[in-house]
Length: 144
Ligand SMILES: [Cu+2]
Image (cartoon, rainbow, N blue to C red; front, side):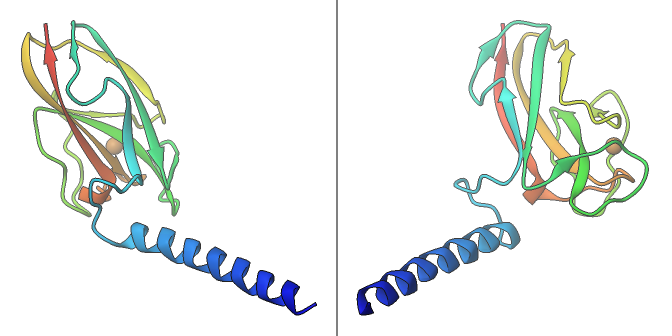
């Protein structure tokens, strides 16, 4: 009988530490090991590809929702070509280097000139206000 109590206590300790770890990742500054935030499903960092290139976007820790209302825990993707992430609470510009996916799209096709480029995904709320660096992801690619 005593055995069971020990097992249960051990199991709940493991469970609680697991939850605490997940919460920690969410609020802390994202290191490279942090998996929350937007992700490029394709292309991958370091890829050499030809134009036009198809881009697939994913998000962990939040849900995709079309622009319009602000709904907690949701937002939409923005693709920034050869630019930096947008600081938290700033509105993501809308120009040829900042593409909004306000309908909740998760894939697109773009044309790029040959050479090295950076692609940044920026997740932002329903009013296009950036969730900041933690909710951004930058990769480097080479276009043939
Ligand atoms: Cu937007």
